[in-house]
Length: 413
Ligand SMILES: Cc1cc2nc3c(=O)[nH]c(=O)nc-3n(C[C@H](O)[C@H](O)[C@H](O)COP(=O)(O)O)c2cc1C
Ligand code: SF4
Image (cartoon, helix red, strand yellow):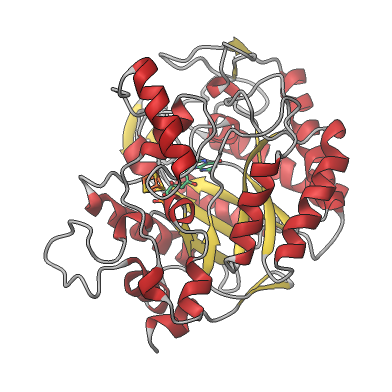
């Protein structure tokens, strides 16, 4: 089978079907209104991705509370956002009813900005700190997640990605560094119970077998005590806990997992590979393969970090560029059984119409992400985010930011 056939073949996810193998990653754009509702530019972004024929589309991280959040203008999912979210989903669905559209539910915990919100933690991490949460406060955060899932369902979303990656609250509870003796801290059985309880509570509250539930998971956060390490003070990779987590979540109804890695505040090149070290992307295929081996055949595993492969002009050595582009290489990952779908992050900013262009035979028109990471610079500067290479509006914002503050020296979120 050629790569086009592989990538454009449909796939079952739970009781639903995605029209092709392209998953669009959650990508925060910090352009919501002051109450966290989608703005016109937010809505147009997702309409475009749906029109571009995304098979499976994930909304950027939407916070379950304004009290603790990482982005000043972050999308929010609280009671007051219910009606605006309904209108937003209706517009995205009208753009393409076939695209499966899920919400990525998040709480930022210790990554919440203390400039405009409350930084909180389950075990203060060097360089981050935050107010120590009581067990009652963690229960309240879990209530907020359950309510958010109900609102997502009511708003017409097809499911949720219960975010357990990238150093946000879910990872903070799951990681070995959460070694304090409390309800969800210390030994693995207690840490994993946080995610298990959440899944059980969400499934019961939503009670709809057609509503998808899954998680984006950092296989290895890559710092001492991070998720996927073997001890609270060790950076050594050990997938025992991540793989056990997948099985436990699957038993509690998970139908898909998005494999990711790193914690962008600490180990950003694991989360989104830097163009100077494109071969880091290969690590992700190992993790996806391990995920795939651990779960049932019907559970969909989505692999990450494909933007760097581009059209084969990617700096990778010892490979023929015609096989090393995102499309042929992504399809090979699926054909080899490492994963079921490929995820597009930065590439989806550069060209939201990639799947449609491929289907229509307009591959030559695809705008390839240059992996310059200027969009990331905008995110770190807390401005609206988009592709600075192919969209003049964001190029202008970048120029203004650099005039004011100079070029960003450290790239971590
Ligand atoms: C500007 C920007 C915003 C992002 N926002 C999110 C987010 O909301 N949730 C998330 O899980 N990951 C987020 N990520 C990470 C991406 O979803 C993705 O995992 C990463 O960029 C790797 O994919 P890529 O190589 O295709 O870009 C973001 C990345 C960037 C550059
Ligand atoms: S700004 Fe650079 S890294 Fe970001 S989407 Fe555009 S080309 Fe890709």
